[in-house]
Length: 325
Image (cartoon, rainbow, N blue to C red; front, side):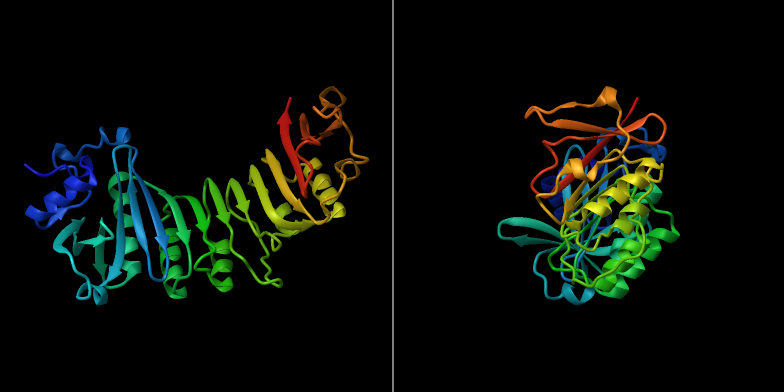
């Protein structure tokens, strides 16, 4: 009888590694015929993080969460811990349990970090039909980023969320590559600090966009985001005329999926009534805020309308929520 590795917590997995060798990491041996009918209740999720000195994957489910660090063979002899082998699919690789300030970490060793990340990604996709829940980037070797991203695209692996970290910072060249080549079905987040002259010509392929330090995200980038539902940009410096341009384009139907937009503005004293001046109103949807200031309801395409609430449009923000009816 085999060992149901997916059904045990981290401590139990450590105990097994003390007694077994060459066991498979993600194989439910107790389920004969490799049936997967019991897997949905576990809700397995794979998180992947690329960083120059700390790449790892995180296996998360309802019962436990296991971080597995991706190291190279060069690191193997330098590491001290319990040494065993694990199997993923047809591949056997060394694994070591390393004590880190009282916490035991799993380290796996490969020819390169890209080999390790790709092996885990492919195994989850092939055996569990699992997307990448989140793919995050920090400072990393340019070649490694391109290798992993190109592999994800060539295998049509689904990425749900993309996160670009600020520390250690990704290079601007690599950030531009990620923007151009990585799409996520749920969200894109970045709080990377970029130089004043950084430019990106294109849309971001994500349903929800959250950007901090977003002075690089221009009105053109905003208007290209035609597939996005939520766009939140902090640190941007949109002018009154740029916001009016956005409203005209939205009104014409250019951003058909938009549900909410929140944008940083150049002048924190900008008046939302000036921004919305001259646009047709939905009188039946106009009201007054709790501070007795007018709530503006702008007519959009068809029966869509945008609500600009004064309570949300202050302290350097322009905010509009879109409704239908």
